[in-house]
Amino acid sequence: MANISVILCTHNPREDYLQRTVDALRAQTLPLDQWELLIVDNASNPTIETLINITWHQNARLLVESELGKNPALSRGISHSTGVLIVIVDDDNVLDPDYLTNAVAIYEDYPFLGAFGGSMEGEFEVEPPSSITPYLEGLAIRKITRDHWSNAKEWSEATPFGAGMCVRREVAELYFERVRADRMRFALGPRGTSLGRGEDTDMAWTSLLLSKGTGCFARLRATHLISKDRLTEAYVERLYTGFGYADEILAYQHADSSDNYNETALDMVRYWFRYVRASRFGRKILSARRSGQKKARETLLKMPAVPRLMSFELGSFTPRF
Amino acid sequence: MKLSAIICTHNPREDYLRRALEALCSQTLPFSDWEFLLIDNDSDEPLALRVDLSWHPGGRHIREEELGLTPARLRGIAEAVGDLLIFVDDDNVLQRDYLETALRISVTHPHLGAFGGSIEAKFEVEPDPRLESLLPSLAIRGVRDTKWANFGLGSIPYGAGLCVTAKVAQAYAADTSGSEIRRRLGRRGSSLVGGEDLDLAMTSYDLWLGVGLFDELVVTHLIDKRRLSPQYLHRVCVEGNYSFNIVRYLRTGIAPRHRGAIGSVMDSLKRMVRICLGQPWTPAEKARRQGERRAARDIRLLQMKRKIEIQTM
Image (cartoon, rainbow over all chains, first blue to last red; front, top):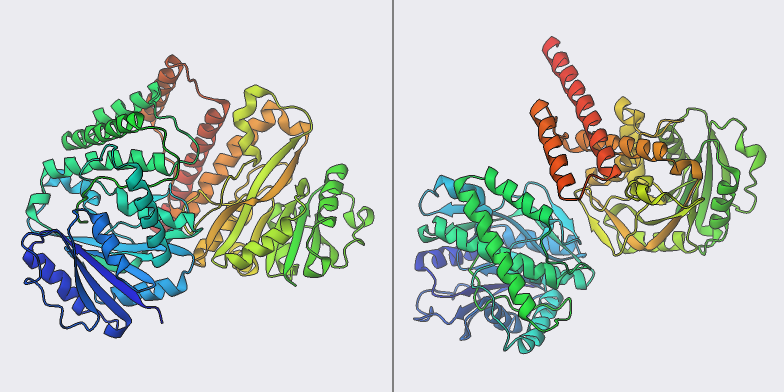
């Protein structure tokens, strides 16, 4: 029977959201002796010790990581964990009761997948403005109706999001090995933007280095609690700037061959064609993405020659998806 | 029996078929692990009279009278006893370790229902460089790394050297013999409409299996000089795109966009922009559009016919 570790990283959480996240873990159908719970308090002020009760779980621990950032927090959690499968939960992810049971089943049935995730539904504190509804995928909301798995990066249907992502231990360990190696390399280099999903994708794609694939499964379901301050145009725009940045960096890091960053005239025409046809907010998103990409290109140009297929930390803090 | 290699052929070019057979003869996989079926698809002179298969203890001649690659393949599927079927064309030269590698992949990747590899071309005469963009429609492809998925069209193997598990092949046979449209897909005589390879590989998806491409598998496609004429290349490209769109529609319900009057105007505008930017359409893009338009038209007809059927029912 597979032994799994659930790692919940949190930084200054919203009390009610964290409570619901923990309650959902408590309601899991997987017997408690088959999984352990590690809660990582990532430099919260005040600490979360008093907020939550984990005495219901025999294998639960509360860890503290003082270096701010999702990667340091996860790294701390993983180094203290023992499971063969690691489930990464954020402090606003309410898992369905059968989530862990299904994750174990998938782990056993699909030995060729290194990382996998599932559907994420949104629960909004307030009704999102209609202009941002087409871009809610940026808030890690996605509906999966059919199982998709693949070992190719270019087909995003099979790339899991960070929220609720299940990773094989060997993949997670390899990822952190690489991040540590690169952190030294980039200690003096520029630090990316503060928003972006870079590190999730990077971790999922690390599977490929072990000749494994990634997948998304319809039977893994969770709910993402979204507070009203995230449902503003400004936040979503900032999010997409981060995506543009992360996409460009990831494309470079995991590139197969081409290192051509120059936009051709045709790309420009395509961009403006799309721009003109987009809605008012769509235009903002397009230009936000583009500015992120530009920033990434500038960053890459300023950097000394970087060996390919090296991952490095994207920003010191990424939002909790 | 672990593996069945199947060649379907109709009036083959003798030297090409000989080279294809020689390549099979020199495979590293011992003969005891595989059988070989030569399906003579209604050739004018029966192949059993002129092709010697005594070099392979498990070699068999089979004659299929119904003309068409799909009927020939169905016959092969019915006769084969291997767990993995490898379809080879009469102008395909397999690399020496092809069968061995394919068998190994089927063991290490039990989640794949169909897979293939790189297809390299060997031209009888050097092709015209202006037609270079059309060459991929001759099913030439380089695979640089391993790629597999249980969705999409990006990792679907082509027909040359196609490896299919017996389970998928049988499911395909069961589906296809009952469906007139799917049976009609596929090259027949001089018609170049393909799509049957795609249909066969995509049957994996129905069985919750994936499809993949592997760089270790290499097959050489011998290309006759007749096939390098601009007319032939153009036709292959148009009909290839046509059948691709039809299969995609049958499988996923995604039809190519039907371009009305405004669409045509927009297309000409785009074309002008491309010319102004110094990147005019390549012959392949032209042919692709032509195939797409033809498929859109036929799919619309099909949809209308269905609508009428539903209304009159």
